[in-house]
Image (cartoon, rainbow, N blue to C red):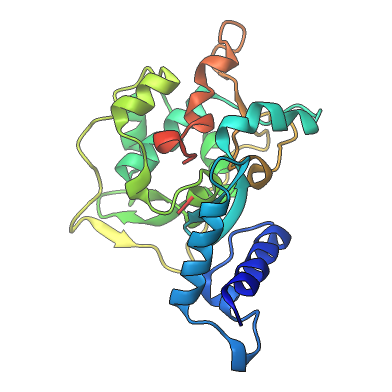
Length: 258
């Protein structure tokens, strides 16, 4: 198979999949006799990315593969295709998620010590239900509190290939105007960590959840660029636009997917 045909099949597959596609999946699209190597697939992806330079879409590698997505700088215009209200995330939820992402594994007690307020159980419940975080183990102290960490789905949603692509804390705080001290000593590392077993289940919160409007498709917009934020602690005085950068820009101009 020639390079143009290979690139066309890969492009069509990425557009049709609507999700990140792994190299092995892309190679498996072809008959065994014509199946390209991983290096050939990567070369075709690079050529496709070059074709998209200066256009409205791009090839993005995330934690679970490659996808074609709308460029972030066009998200505001493209979001008008969906007249529904976008998802609204509280500042408290985003601060909690940021602490977990940057200082994982971390307990709820660690989060409360940094934020200075109790963690709303519904926040953790929402993050678990969205599969942005998971229980990675338990700290070996009385009570064996759960240790929380992020997931591959978290990285995919925010357009990251790995946690190394998270923006510097100074940049994140400047974008989101967060009023928490994020640069504290990492917690839960070393001998006091016990891995979670398959039987460990997420903790359940109260029945009432964090109010959330219908969400836009994050893949269509380039990983959640259309999301708005709302401060559940002071919704009347908080301008949702002031926090939007946490989701809208992510790391170095990209959203936060591994």
